[in-house]
Image 1: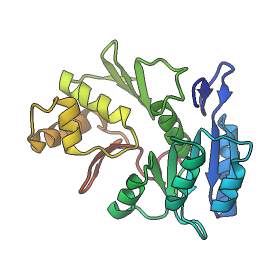
Image 2: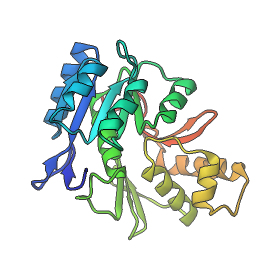
Image 3: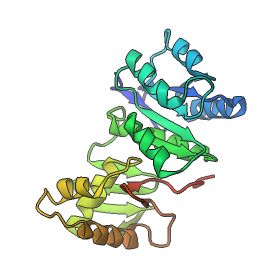
Length: 245
C-alpha cells in the first residue's frame, strides 16, 4: 500500500504520503493539517470517529494521527475501525497523559508511536517519517542508513554520527543502537533486546542496563537525550518532550 511514497522530507516525484488526522480541538486540527501539508504530506482532518471513517471514502491514508480522547468513541477504539478499512494502517497517538498505563493501553491496540501534548510540530513530522520508514513507506531512502532526528547509523560503513559528529561504538553498542533505531518511537523490553542483540545467549538483564548506560554516555552526551527508560517496560529511542519547538 505504501511503496514509492515520500513523507515530509521526500523528493524526486514520488507520491506524497497521505495522513489522516483525527483531533477534536479545531485549532490543533487546523495547525496539524496545515503543517503536514507544508511538510510534504497530503493531509485530511476529522474531528471525531464518525468523521474519520467517513473521510476514508475516496481517501486511503498511509498513516493516521489520532487524539486518544475523542468525543463519543476514543482514539484507542477507533484504531480497530480504521484498520478494518485500511489493514495495517500505522498510527501515531496524541495524548495529554504520559503515564505507563496510557502507553501500555496504546501498545495493546497496536500504536506505532505516541506524542504527548503539548508537542512541537517538528516532533510530529519526525515521528511520522520514522514510522513510515519502519513500515516500508520510505524505500526511496538508502536502506543501509538509519536516521532518527540528528542521529545517523550507516550499517555498511559501520559508522554512527550525531549532528554530523562521529561516535565510536563497540560492535555490541552498534548492534544495540541499531535495534533501538529500527524500533524508534516504540518501547522495547530487556528480554527483546537480549534476544535480538545477544541472540538469546545471555539472560542477565543487567547486561542490557550496562550497555544502555554506555550508549547514553556516547550518543546523548551534551545533547538532548534520545535514549529513554520507560519504567516497568523497557527502553525507547525518541525525542524528549517539547524538543524542536
